[in-house]
Structures are given as C-alpha cells and as structure tokens.
Image 1 (cartoon, rainbow, N blue to C red):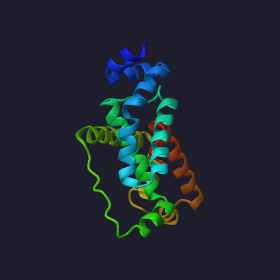
Image 2 (cartoon, rainbow, N blue to C red; image 1 turned 120 degrees about the vertical axis):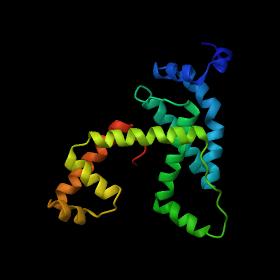
Image 3 (cartoon, rainbow, N blue to C red; image 1 turned 120 degrees about the horizontal axis):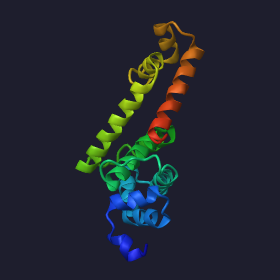
Image 4 (cartoon, helix red, strand yellow; image 1 turned 45 degrees about the horizontal axis):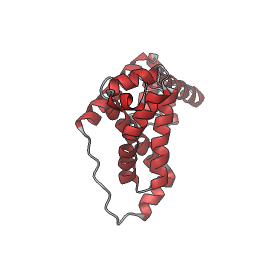
Length: 188
C-alpha cells in the first residue's frame, strides 16, 4: 500500500494490517504518534533520553507482540496508556527517585487523563483482573497479599502456613502467568 493511502487509513485498519505483519502500516502508526507520545513522556520525566527510550520500548513491544495485542478502544489511547505505565514504572526505580529528590523544589506537571486514556486504562484494569482470576486460588491470594496488601514474603508465609520459598515460587509463577496474559508489559 502506498504512503498517501496509508496516511488516509483509519487507525483501526492500520492496526489490523500491523497484526498481519505490515511494516508500512506499523511505520504509519509510528509516524502518527511518536512525537505526541515522546512529548507526553518528556513532560512527566523532564529527561529527553529516557522519554525517547520509553517511547521506543513501547513501539518495539507493540511490534513484537502485535499478534497478541487486542486494541478495543483507539490505537492512540492504547499507546498513551502504555507510555504512561512505562513512565510510572520508570519513576518507581531507585535511580529516578533520587533524581526527583534532587529536583524537589521544581514544580512537576499535573498528570491528567484524557477520555481515551481513561477508557484504555479501564480496559487494561479489566484485563488485569480477568488474568488475576485465572490464577489458581492459593497463587492468586499470595499475589494479592504481596502486591495489593503490601505484605512481605515472611508475612505471607506465616499467614498461609507456607515456607518462604513456596511463597517466592508462587509469586514468581503468578508474575509469569500475568505477564503472559497481559503481554508482559505492565509488570516490570
């Protein structure tokens, strides 16, 4: 398909072509959204290199997992949410925390959600809960105690009368299953 035709093609059709392996359609989606996604990441991080890396990681992931990604809202909304989660994951890292401690006096931008991002976020949340319910009961409870209740491995082991190694194994297995179900994207 020629470049002018691709430029007029709706996102949903482009994404379908990407899922079928079209590099041209993928390139068109990249051209449409790279700059916007980069700006979004930059204004949350104030770091050009990291913002660029995050956007590149999202696009690489989307190409690698194209046959598994089901976009039920808009391509732009999906990409924005993906970048937002990557930014949040980056901010969780110790290196980023230290940088922001040094910038403590600087006013950080307010993070707001567009309607598309809110819908895409809701879709992601629903997918997460669906995948969580697919875990075996004991594994699901161990994961919830760890990630949602903030319990330590030792506390979980005592609560469920398990060895600490069993808890670690259950958490590792749960993360693996959730990564597979969600495409491994948001649980880094």
